[in-house]
Amino acid sequence: MVLPGSTRSDRAFATITALYDAALDPAFWPEALARLTELTGSQASTFWVLDAGSGSLHPTFVSINFDQRVVDDYVGGIASLDPTVRYLLAHPKARIVHDGMLGSEHDEDTRKYMDWHERNVETRYRLVAQSEMGAELQAGIALHRTRRAGRYDQDDIGRFSVIDDHLRRALAVGVKLGSLATQQQITADLLDRNVSAIVLLDAHRRVVFMNRAAEELKARADGVRISADGIRLASRQEDEHLQTLISRLIVSQQSQRSFGEVMQATRPSGRQPYGVWVAAVAQSPVALTVFRPAVWVLINDPENPASPPAPHLQALFGMTQAEAKLAIRLAAGESLRTAADALGITYGTARTRLIQLFQKTNTQSQGQLIQLLLACLPAVGPI
Image (cartoon, rainbow, N blue to C red):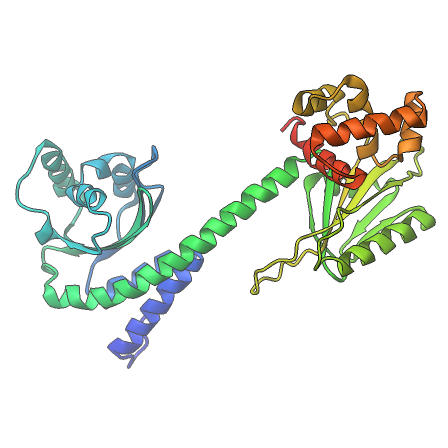
């Protein structure tokens, strides 16, 4: 851990660097804690998150030089009796907390904690740096010394405050990135629950994301071929049309004036054609990202048993059964005339129902209507 001849400033810099690394990747917390423990003349240390609003007071707890059985006891319930933890919860904005701030009065919970601590833990003194992450959410580091090593004095606290400045910055960055990662995970999970196949392409038409339904569609190889280089259709004429749509939408990505295009894709198996909707993705305002989708392709299989029936649309938008049947066919990629023929109604009747659909869905064009339908149809399926 410590290189021969390394100075204290070198070790301090390495410790600060390790804190930033750990905030970006939790796997590095043990290394950061080990460096911090050695630098401060401590015998153990912990990184923790306090969540007063959840059932688990310590949803995150990383330690070094503590027996795991003791850690399990502590996180499992003893922590709620700990006077330091109670002080931190009562003073979320306090940056540095040490034993001298806790007072000498011992209530019943404190006595229970002290009895447990005396029996199970060798360390006696503690120095804590914490940061308020949000409502009822705090995170920080605690240093621990044995009785033989002695208390943390004012010089120790002063040096630790320098580390604390970097810890707060590192945690702030970590929270932002962690929150973003959580949002992305939720989004990916929702996309995976979508019954339609969703493929995101970059400006070079390369695939940057596929949901679970797209993976299954790729495995079936029935009229659609998906590879890292892009998405192709079995029919040459349909594929040329698809590639033209993709190119056009990549160019129009800046303006976002288009609601996308809808087409059908025939299947060599002879089963009902896929409904394909191609639309531009709003240009990302994030500069530092390698994930830059430009176009998304949504493919709906009308024979998919998971596809929602007409009653879902009736409930969502107050459609009649006839209007919902027309809406589902339009969402599957059928033209208005083809849908009219399939439903056994005249083209004029279909146009009248389409106007009614515009009114009930607050849309103004067939493109907008289909965009809304394709967004809503999977969402009311068996999620």
